[in-house]
Amino acid sequence: MKKTINHAFFERSPQIIARNLLGYFFIRKFEEGKVVGRIVETEAYGNQTDLASHARFGVTERNKIMYGDAGVLYVYSIYGIFWLTNIICGKNGEPGAVLLRSCEIVEGQDIARKLLEKSKFVKADDRLATGPGKLSLAFGIDKTDNYTDLIENDIISLEKGDPPSDIIETQRIGIDYAGISKELPWRFYDGKSKLISHK
DNA sequence: ACATGGATTCGCT
DNA sequence: GCGAATCCATGTT
Image 1: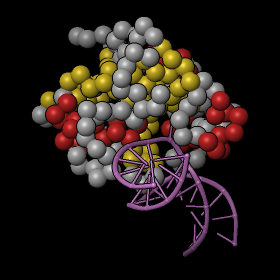
Image 2: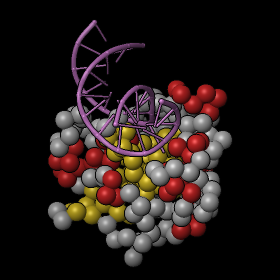
Image 3: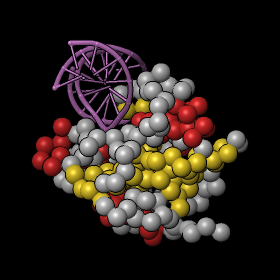
């Protein structure tokens, strides 16, 4: 039995969890095998006071998942082209999520490549899961994976890994609309990794 | 029922 | 650095 992660791990602030998840392994099983990615880039999204968060307008049909139990996947579509993969954080009633932005695929690169090639909007080079849209493609994640509990289910999971020696904190990407919140240092990445979406 | 715009990516300038 | 691809959640009529 591998090291497990319990729900309590996710019942903390998204900033703490986004940082802690660096070096962890994100895993999805397929019939042909499994895809394993070392997480090297994340972003935290907070409550109503975070003007970049989907929770900034209060509860809606799409974002109500952010107010629910931690440790479940929040998957939503963006630009009509991509799915983005998040993990719900915080205690029940406190909205928060961590966006998975980049992985180093350490197993199942052939499976990930085939999944990427199904999309006409990405190029399947050696940066297979670099960027949140490509990461979701590489793990075959779409709206059918929304609400998946990472602790309970047997297909998608997280395993502990060693934290990077060099963790960089910067502003989040693609949130120019967020006013003062765009300056929050809530993006985290492994400073030694080459597979980061933006430097 | 309709208008708006986005937690992206790629290719061209 | 900028525009296009493309669709659904959201807010407004």
